[in-house]
Image 1 (tube, rainbow, N blue to C red):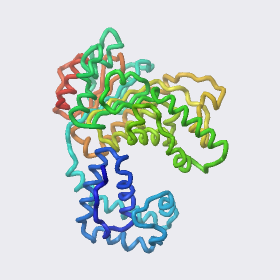
Image 2: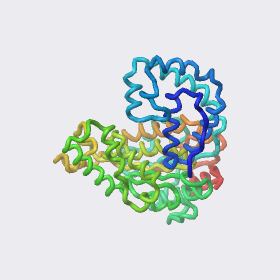
Image 3: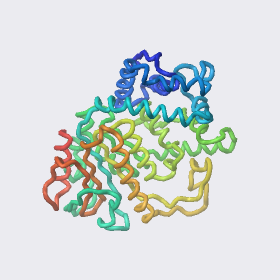
Image 4: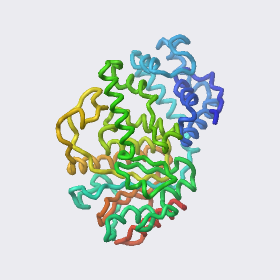
Length: 394
């Protein structure tokens, strides 16, 4: 699908550069991103010149010329140009002022359909419900957990103890609202059995690709071919997942590669991968339904510099150990971060139900609008499932 064409020659070049870069990579944008840039392009075509006048006056003072900043170009060279420029703080202030005018108009056109964010904690955390979700403000609901804990997730996601994918919340949402409208992101592979049509990411499932990435990074680091993570990321752009599930989808292949090479531990720590992939999915794809499954992480071993991309089992002789308490502490922050990240975007404000559950626990945390209907507790997981279906209207 070719990108749309817009006429915004009247807009300063430093403002349109990033926008033009997105048009060049149009097929690597999620539908929600494409919708945003279509709205932005239409706005810029009709925007009054006065909106950009201060920025147009600043650019010559910054040294912006066709040679230093070719029209429509936004590369590492331009990023360095901005970061080194003494007028960069003033430029940032003017860019923010422009978006303070533009964003309300774009937000007004954004769709406000009901949404569901389901965050699942693992069964082995060393605390009870009273110590869970302490950073969140919501309703604690009593649950009737199943006798067999293996039925917990299937009952929640599909309404049945044995997964029936025809009733899976992610699959129902994906069928009703289109590609990339429903996601599952997890540390293990538990959610994979409860969905087929949704966009699915599993840290454990990506093990072969993660190992290839770490091996390639090790070769590059040994040869001294890169100066830092930014250059490393550029060099590794051609190394994509081979798994058939991702190889046929260049958009998801690039999303996975970028997530694992973010430089913040996503390649090494399962829950960091889950948290970062989830917030990036929310930021970029704006899914109507996302199920986030955390796990128990291993104790982090010492690393530094480019070793953040190295296989820690091979890089150090320190034995690998599961970190139950550390996982609990991390997750209390990650729960809040996912909730805060979603609330940054107009698509999630006032119309999103957040369910925070922990496998096997007899209590959940509900953060939802007043019109999300649940029966009085203790409630079954089947009842929670059907309340979510009603909420999403699927």
